[in-house]
Amino acid sequence: MEVIIVPNAQEGSDVAARLVARQVREKPDSVLGLATGGTPCKLYQLLARMHRSDHLDFSRVTTFNLDEYLGLDPAHPASYHRYMEENFFSQVNIARGHIHIPDGLAGDVAAHCVAYERMIRDAGGIDLQILGLGSDGHLGFNEPGSSLASRTRIKTLTERTRCDNARFFTNPCDVPHHVITMGLGTIMESRMCLLLAFGSGKAQAVAASVEGPVTASVPGSLLQFHTRAKVILDAEAASLLARAAYYQWVYKNKPEWQTDL
Ligand code: GLP
Image (cartoon, rainbow, N blue to C red; front, side):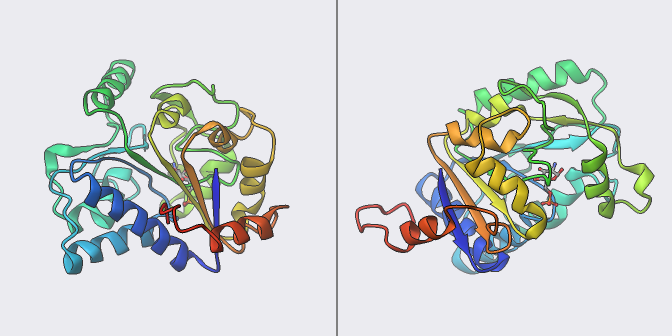
């Protein structure tokens, strides 16, 4: 796990955008795993800007989103379909047929989840998975207690997550209880994971994920088992890390041969 601490969310999003851009330039038909929520908004803006001004080409890229609320129409203002359309897909030249987001209106949810997993496999697996972190340590919508081997499936949100996400809904009571999410096992099969966390509200979950024991009680901690996970934090999100100074030294003093940013 590489921990990258930068002063603020803007710089963290810059680092993440450079990594995603490099992935897409090196492998134009990359498969990207995408996240929603407040955290990756700036990252999507930067990628859209790179598309407009630096010819970053998404035409051969395939995407799989982590999750979606069950029961929300794609046109609902708080749906992740709508979020992705507004924040990213409408801003870049991605081919419509290459976009995959779990269907919140799927009639047969179990069959839909199996098909989603199959589509990820058929696409060759996810090259780079962007992740945010819930204040309770969740990844995607894998709430604490989720099986560490889980696959795409239906999950029930905790009250804490429903409250955290209420800001995206006109009426807080409308936050659905149920969602479809890629599983932790699905996420762990991505060839690279890029976890972003900004703000003091994430500090506890970050410390537990990065320096605590690996446990289903903190889904983010599973990334300690990933061979290529980068955690990009602003100063506030990193504020409870015991080894913050060490991570910062390592990042600033990377030997030249370590071209990995
Ligand atoms: C939501 C999403 C996650 C996201 C997390 C953090 O529940 N399902 O994918 O990473 O919450 O959200 P935010 O970035 O808004 O803090």
